[in-house]
Amino acid sequence: MMGSFLERLRAGDILVADGATGTNYQKMGIEIGVPPEEWVFDQPENVLALHRAFVDAGADIILTCSFGGTRLRMRDSKYADRAPELNRRAAELARQAAATRAGVLVAGSMGPTGALMEPFGELTRADAVNAYAEQAAALAEGGVDLLLLETFFALDEAQAAIEGVKRACALPLVVSFSYDQGTRTMMGLRPSQVVEAIAPLGIATIGANCGKSLDAMEQIVAEMAAQKTGLPLWIKPNAGLPKGIPPAYDTTPAEMADYATRYVKAGARIVGGCCGSTPAHVAAIARAVHGRDNAA
Image 1: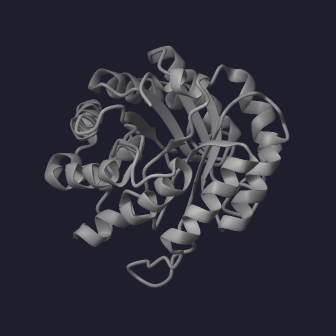
Image 2 (image 1 turned 135 degrees about the vertical axis):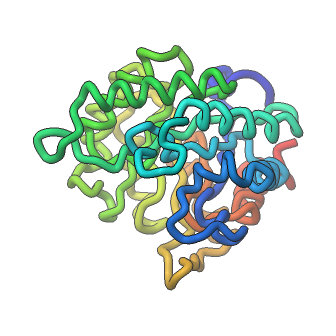
Image 3 (image 1 turned 45 degrees about the vertical axis):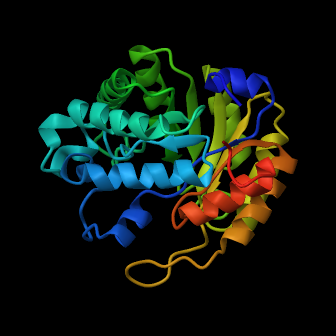
């Protein structure tokens, strides 16, 4: 199970991605309201510890702690003027953890800016393109193997983000939308509509993450696979829906693993977990899809 991300996809490998960042940091003591990205500078030992826990659990791909790392999303952070440096450091920490087991890949995580684009909001296309180009360049400099645009819900922002990434580097790009309305995004898009718009843009993989339920995600996988684009599918559902404060998730590792195998049978090539998913969830997924205790 060695080689680059694209080589492993071409070889037909099934890859296991890691689990949640924010909800696991909450268990590690991050205060409510603190952006997880700030731990890259403030608590790097905890960032490393979570990365290593996912590597030990059998993850083939770990995500950098940079989901909210665009300059636009960081404007209220105490590190607003250090966005490129923070992204580079996030990549370096993940790279350090990945080195503890041969073949582990690092994906540079990039989430939405948190603003709506014109005419629905004040975010211009040019500003979005520039923000994602800056973030992608910094993550590439930090040593990531691939880039991931995740939890998107609007086509216009995703398209601007793709343009920015491609302007900055030539790394493989995964684009993953969140269908938090069941089988539609917050903007009302169905998986087939997203695939139709995004698949032709020169990306390596398309997928879905977060979402409402494991059953809904199974429907999403089926609808995306039915489009027959030839693109591998990246699937990372939540471990159920959050309950209480701090949020608790009740989907067991065994349940996540069972659904992961169903997603693979339906056409997924990369499976993992999103909010609420712990190293135990990832270990169960790795056992289920790799047939052994971990991917080593």
